[in-house]
Image (cartoon, rainbow, N blue to C red; front, side, top):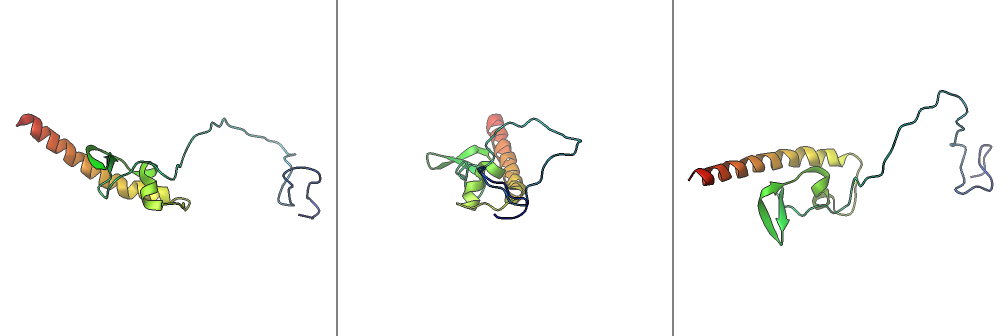
Length: 109
């Protein structure tokens, strides 16, 4: 990290890629911490049904980051959560509609 713009006696050291913020305008926005990816999520089956005590729920389905660990295992590629959300969102939606239809038929019987 020895270059003409490197810092000295600072941790962490910075290379020439660090640039000073010395020309306005300056902008800022509020941030707050949050968990966006746990590598685990809820255990689901191929129908996106959440498992409880090893058994799939009849009426709880998830998609996206809530079940990404089932697909990704121990790794994560940026943006793949969108694919998981899109694919399993469709599956979960279809399965939720089927579950609601079955429940409605059961209530009228």
